[in-house]
Figure (cartoon, helix red, strand yellow):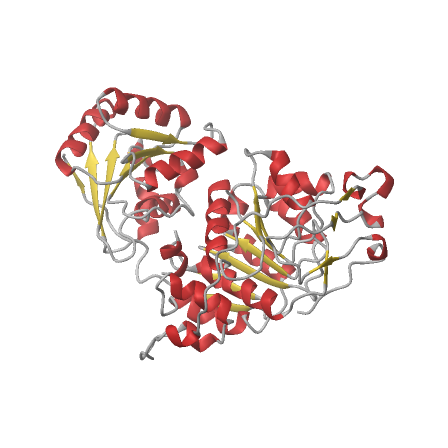
Length: 461
């Protein structure tokens, strides 16, 4: 959600550029214009064998409708200076971007935005470390938008994004895409999101038949389109790696290395790298992919927040479901996420809750992507009030008004505990976290307490 979002010049296309049909950047996004998919460069393969060598004479519909433009002036966006706060006005952003910010009702930068944006907007590589929900997404999106608007290109080609954002999960990529669509509402920038588990041909058409300004992708699906030569990354001016630590944990770094090698050299692009933690492996990537980066670390006052009341119940494994039912009856959560470690456990738990008269939906890796998106929308819109999930929903998913989180099983990674309970107690609201701890869960307690830096008080329900 956007509330959590805020909380160079052109390069030569290479020796093969002369063979491509040009696309004028002056053509409005909601008009049809001929486009040409880019033929491969010599390093990418034989043009005669390339799918991308075909000419497309008609654009498909753009990914977002252009709003009816009404007159607007920056004078309508009045924000008084405040000591210790940075206004978006202070960053000299373009009016089109400021209008999008104004429409969402935001006035002052979050700490990570205030620290990162001044240098990032100058084109400097920037490394930002902050916890989830602190506004990292807006920090890199505003950097991209300002750069692309201020440096328009006279000639554009289909399949060539100017900015690329890599995210580790489909849910996070879709969320970033949604935020980007909102912020670009009053610009002519075109945002395309490609992730696995969704209509491949539809995504392929958006890449091949459109001028793409900002491409948001998960590593696997992007590699697919690179192999088929439906996308070319040698014009990427801004590269963003979001949740780099998570990409390491999920084993995506070999794919990410391949993607980075396909972009402009680090001397010719701007690299923005954001992460909740900077371990040794992440720092190696920073050294390899950036030049003299501006590094920002926003340390939380404590690992977990005072806005979340943490309850830990010591119970037998066989008692968990009955205790969960009692929690639902007594706490009456308005919106609840229940986390468990295994897909089969979440599936069985969701079925049992529905059989007992509750409205629960499932979010796990075995659920098809399109259904996962519909599930999240139903949960966001309040059609159902219980979401049963694996840690696929632990990071990057921002749902307003989550009042309770239940750890049906404790995660093996202490960081995942923090991300789980961070789904509630957001935007200044209070939240409740309830962990059901059996003898099996007790084995991870020492590592969790060490990570949190505090002794956890276990009680009987």
